Image (cartoon, rainbow, N blue to C red; front, side):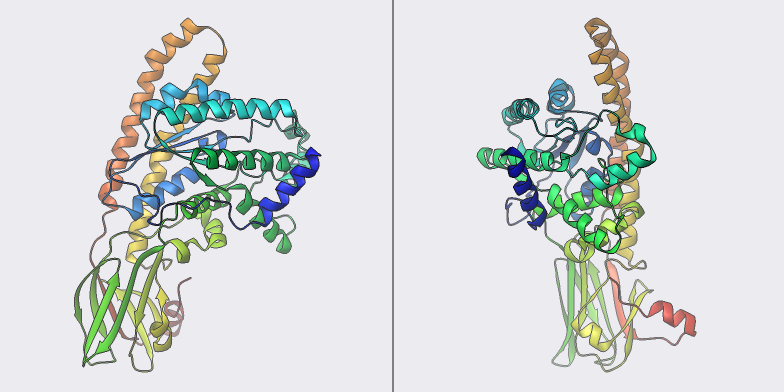
Length: 451
């Protein structure tokens, strides 16, 4: 009976496009000073999906000072999160929390009531503690276990499968996820489905490549899979997709333009139908992926859906036109394409994309040099706590341990200050003018339509 139920749940999660509960129509509704915490296990400890979501908020809300804390520890089950709750979670005083636990809680075995009851009991206690903090909570389903990737990995290295007998483990995680969705409904939380998109995209990828995976070790999504997770979160938060949209058209013998959202300055043009120049001050920057996550960005079409920079120029004479930002060529399109719409957010020459890349590189530095070492420290804390010598643990944690934490938190805050200097949008002069004559190779390179 249970195995039949698990199969039904697994099928439902894979085929459903999204299980996320609706959020506010204006997005997550963050305000200046909000403090967002990511609670989880090693998948959170990886500092990837968390970093990508931080990148979105750093670029989308540059005038709003937000603070983030990764609270993931490798190997954690829900009980471990409880053991570090005061030091690692409550002390941060979060206003928003996401919870991603369950991968380790199922113990990589077929479903048993005893294992599930332990998970449900400890998760319930954790959620009660979060409720006591009056924090806004988003429960996330466990991610997928890739059985095919596991079998291939163990075939190459049998030791990698030691202590794991996961014949139906992906179905077990489906069950855990549906339990979490029901808890979210009962408590009035948001719910974010991570399991469904990863399964769906994996199956779609295997239609073209039988060995395709987003999770090479079966458990921990790599950059592309982690970006899929981040995108699923931004979708569940219902964050708006447009960075800016600019329309220029002739009206009563002059160029008229409107931009939304964004501030529009001077609109000038030479001969009507031949060229136009506009000054635009964007309110935000596009959300761009690191190289490690570019396939994930492609699979989710995140640029078009969550980072759109759209330029439309109606009324141009037939021909090809260069689009420039502050005098730098971005691309060349004909009058038909420009009259419909071109998207600039993914173009390498886009000035806003280049500025956003500097932001995400800084956040990568913040995570690599401060946040991940901080999570390693909490992993060390868990090991010391398990030794059972409370006096020795207290002496280390309240002395050298806390001192090391303070150094890492200070470094993270300093890099965050730098992020909020670099992420401030600047005014851009956008020009559309007849395409310049170029050597064939240059012309070919410049004649493009961004994805």
